[in-house]
Amino acid sequence: MSYTSKDVRVLEEVEHIRLNPSMYIGDTQMPTHLVEEAIDNALDEALAGYATIIAVILDTKSHKYSVLDNGRGIPITDDTPIIVSSKLFSGAKFQDKKTAYQISSGLHGVGLVAVNALSSDYKVEIFRDGKHALFEFKQTKLINSKIEPNGKPGFSTKIEFIPDKKFFESVVPDIERIRSRLITASAELDDKMTFVLQVDGKKEVIKLTLDQHFKQNCLTTGEVEQTVLLNSEKKPEQFRAMFAYEDGGPTGAKVLSSVNLLPVESGGTHVNRFIEMLQEFFVYRGKKDNYKFQPNDIRYGLRAYLTLSLIEPKFSGQTKDKLTNRKTYFDKFIKDLRNQLDQFANDFPDQLNKLLERFEEYRRKLDSKKLSGNDSGGRRASTKFTKLRDCTTRTGELFVVEGDSAGGSIIQCRNPNIHAVLPLRGKSIPNVTVKKDILKNKEVGELVMALGAGIGPHFNISKVRYSKIICATDADHDGAHIACLLTMVMAILLPEVVKSGMYYIAQTPLFAINEKKTFIPLWTEEELEKARKDNRQITRFKGLGELSPHQLKISLLDEKTRRITPVQYSENIDDLIKLFSSADEKRKLVGG
Image (cartoon, rainbow, N blue to C red; front, side, top):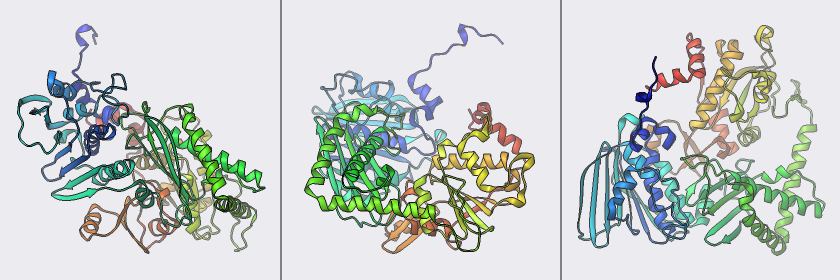
């Protein structure tokens, strides 16, 4: 096969996006990210102090989506609307930071180009400088443009588009995620902005304070004695932290954050640095007053919301779900936050002592559990593993869960006679089809040891310690990926467990009716829509770690309300192995 200069092809920007959409917008299951890109641009005008209203209009029947703001409007001279809609790395954020934008949500100059590239119809409408401008695109090609004297503008910039069906599994965006984006932005701006979300003609006005947002989205029971607000400001940058300790709900820390009005769902160095500061502070004060606990004990019941405004945030990718600035970047903020924390301790010594007593009591409980035996007549809890919390019967269930936070909550609500829990770090589970020395992996090794039946030629199914092995991960794409990796580990290393029908995957709720003492998981879209029509109070859970022990009991442990599905061993296992190990096979599957 020949390879010459004639084989080299240079792609236009929009063409490259259309060939590789996930490279630019991440997940292509739904066009949610396209709506968010348009929202980011509107939020930049809000951050700059010009926009006071942002409206998002979603029509799930015509699949037409619009984002409007009343900021300054995209400049209409020199074909600027065409450039920012068709040329990558274009925008006003690459100049000196002191010109158009000091703090901004969109950073990469990809946003509107990606929206145009992945839409069948795309339109930019602008009212600026006494003129009305309209630019319409069809399949990324400009088909109409005009600039004329304006009438009565109700907005400055409107981005309207219809996602192209060939790029998405569904052309309906995640409405709850978009609502969450607007709620976050409203809280960050402390209700100085008005956000409007209109879905299929039904209008919702979103306007709330940071304190309201913290109570609604960080707390589970609302049982906190005092909320602490820390604020380090290095104009125009800012690092605010609101935190409290909650009784009830998940035992692990729940820390939400946003950077430049963007929810940062996977955390990052700012979250790590903040928790390190709390650990250093409470350990220092604890030693000073002779309290005994470990640094990680300060995570028990911690609820925090971090809001940052940064000139140069660095994210892990275009989807901006994790902040990757170096820890030293936050030193200038952490010093101020620590000083304010010292001031809090001086102003509220009784509250400080209550927290130190809380940590010490938690450590005492953990240590007593390690020392106690099991007098129920069955097996003793296993001491061979660092994370496994065993059950006492040979007919129990082993829950393999993603993360220590979820594991800790299940341990609180389980029946120790029949429920064993093994928390694993999901992203540390390797792809068994390509990983060498697979048994050297800590997570896989702990799973094999927990089952107690050996492996390979030494495997004996009669020695499996449990009647069911249940995989429970978060109800998102990362969780599904982890479940796939764990399932392949079971199918390849422990196939007899799968063949015998012992291995299950649990469905975990993304939404639930959550009203005082009523908790009902919503397993299907139909159930969710019915609950919305009935005006029930609905909570969206980003992960298992956000569910309280009581909620996890209903969702995972109670046989009457949970949903677990046995995994059937595939007759085409070789094809599955090939799919997991071959990039070419994956491309064939997605039609690439």
